[in-house]
Every structure is written in C-alpha cells, then in structure tokens.
Length: 166
Image (tube, rainbow, N blue to C red; front, side):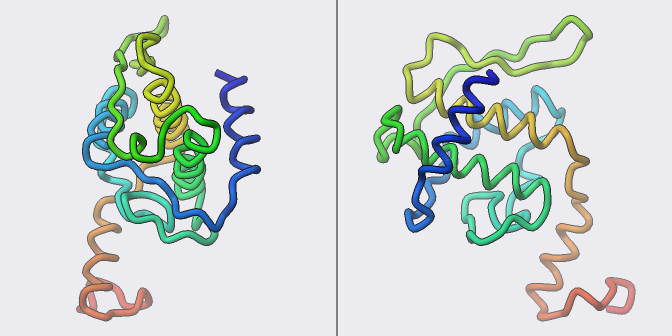
C-alpha cells in the first residue's frame, strides 16, 4: 500500500492542473459509499460539497482544510488512473470494482480491494481506499454546519450571521 501511495503522489505531481478533473459518477460513488460505510460507519455523502474538492463538482484551487485535501488527492488519483494508463478516460467515472469489508485483528472494519479487479478497478479502489483512510483521520464535517452553510448560501446570508439571528 505504501508503494501505491508513493506511486500516486509521483503521478499527481506529473499531472497538468489544466486538465478537467475526473470525478466519480453516482455508480462509482456507490462503491465509495460502501467503503465509507464499512470503515467509517457512515455515508460518504456527508462530505458532498465540502470545501473545493469533495463531491461530484470539484471547484479547483486550494484545499480549504485537511478533509478537502483528502478529496483533492482523490480527484488527482482518479486523473492519474488515466495518465498512468490504468483506465481509459471514458471508464473512470463509471467503472465498478469489487471490495470486501473485513474485520482486522483488533476488531476494526476495513475495506479490502479485491485482487480479482481489472487494473482500472483495482486502481480506482485504491484511490477510494486512500480517501476513506484519509477521512478517518479527522472528525466528520458536522451535518448541522453543512445545512447552515447551504441555508445561508441559498438565502444570501453572510457567514458572519448566526442561524439564531435569522
């Protein structure tokens, strides 16, 4: 796994930032969601639209926090699946993969990418595995904060106003 992460980071450095990011479709998000449910115990959807890189519509620019940095590396990992010729660009958004949810020696659930995957599926599974393992290092975004931010955006409120003053 360490060799894979080194490979991904080296690949990311070689990617052009001018390329449009490849992001997972709802089909591959179901694989990511299963992985998150296995390891984190909650849906990957809590990260939707977090920062500049989490979700299906990455905005680009700088990552806003550590969670967003996890998502940025994930987007770049998906891009590197094409530049490293593991996947065709048309395959990436929809390519399913096989994984297993296992319990390790200390009782923690871990997602394991199935070796029976083709090279594209295995690469994308590793990208998603990196993302979930990265998210696991930080507390999840507060769902209430997400709803507050969405409410403020939809009603043109600045972030300096509190919900209680509305």
